[in-house]
Length: 216
Image (cartoon, rainbow, N blue to C red):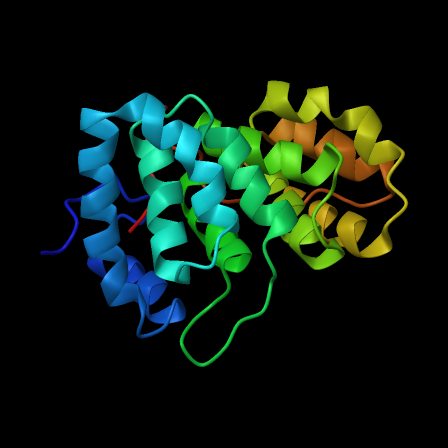
């Protein structure tokens, strides 16, 4: 049976369908694995948390690993953030006709949840700035998602790190994302510090601060 709704970030069926399509035909199996891990999280959360790293790094199918990440987040396993970071840092970012890689899918899910979910933004911040860093492309994507959706206080906390950034691809992605950030005053200040004007238009602010789960 398909997995129950897990608080997807996408607010309409079209976004959710697009997310599944990007993850390829094997995404249909993810619901079965999600149900499996959901039951384990309810019945034996400590054991699942202890087993999770081995599952992620083991030989199992990618949809099972993605389902584990979603359950870890949605059921707040104690090592949830570390598991998402492990996927971004350690798993190969190699996509194939069956779908996107686990790290790429993880970033897609985090991006879709980051606007309303501070826990997703924290994972993105750590992926962008805390060693060991993911591969450069994954790091740039994580940084872009963080800088697009971070609140004013979150942006101020990484201002010095952004000023010291030396990876041109990361910096370009971050500054482009800032032009869409709704924390206008702080975002414009960061753009100005890098010689860029404020944008003419911006995304609307989040309508609700409520914590949301990962998208399906």
